[in-house]
Image (tube, rainbow, N blue to C red; front, top):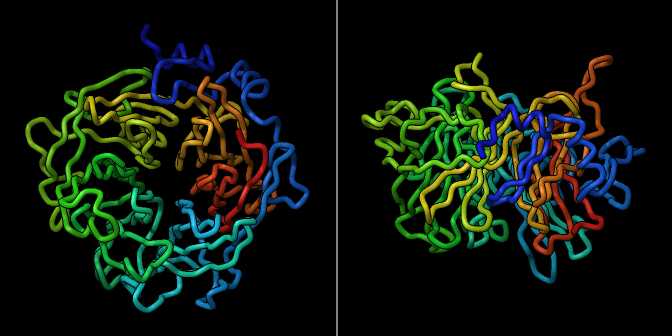
Length: 451
């Protein structure tokens, strides 16, 4: 049976056969009741410290805060904490690699460190937090500097982090001395091994996130372009797949996804809908004369989508997010968020999750951004819409539940505002959730009875 947006809004929550085994919207009271009664952890309890509301039985620790001094002595903790990943370290410790989405106006830049700085005129980059087996912060240092608007990224099978620049600015603009719009590889254990080298063959565009196929080494990339022409979904075929640190520098081929007959993913409003896909070679990955999404992809054209953001590998394929689409901004349809699944073995694209309108702030009503898989096989979603900001979970049975709420009001008197969440990730043992509050830049470690 075809599942349309209208039937979704009436039913609230529906199970279907798919990679997540679940479908949800944030539209109806019925869905809200199911979330509270089902697979979640109970209602959120107001935090007396006014930082992070969590379910009963859960606690948090503030690991890092923008403006504090880094333990390395390299300067202060930078602002705008965004994408993040957790890596195992010796004796049960953890290393967190954290992006800083700093533009030219950022008050707290990533300090320029010799050997790790790409462009002294750029203020973004990555920092690494080192935690002991008890979860205590023991070190914090710069891992990449001199990059711009480092939004999200993704981890590799050889335990490095790919940090993405969400900009296309060239040298000579915005105070930059070098071109931007690249992916950079960061070794969390030894940043000096990777340095600050752009992976130019992976394309120059407004990167958001990446996910690596652990079987083939193919890298999937999202492009966050929120004005027309919207972004594309890419795959990079490395010349040396799965070759370890440095292999992506050997070059490769960049291709863009084409769904025949479908120019804009926003027109799809039937979760479970499946499409055959084609991959088309990008004429000029360096965008030396024309932005990639504007280049000529031949008679069949190319498939665009507004606000392509989160991207991760799970199971047998790659999941990626379109945060929203709005006809008034040039999209071919309206939605409040989609999660897509691409199956590389079958060359098929499927719409798995469709978000509903922001009718109930207790549910994920609009603008999903960073996402990850939870240890129980469900989904964790960072919301980046209006009003209250949440991390939500969705079980494999389709039940939506709150995980955390940003309790720190950063707005003006009478006009409350809460910063978005970003960088949600779990420790290698699945016992700790790490997440960033983008503003004010804060990194939390959340422990409790995770399933």
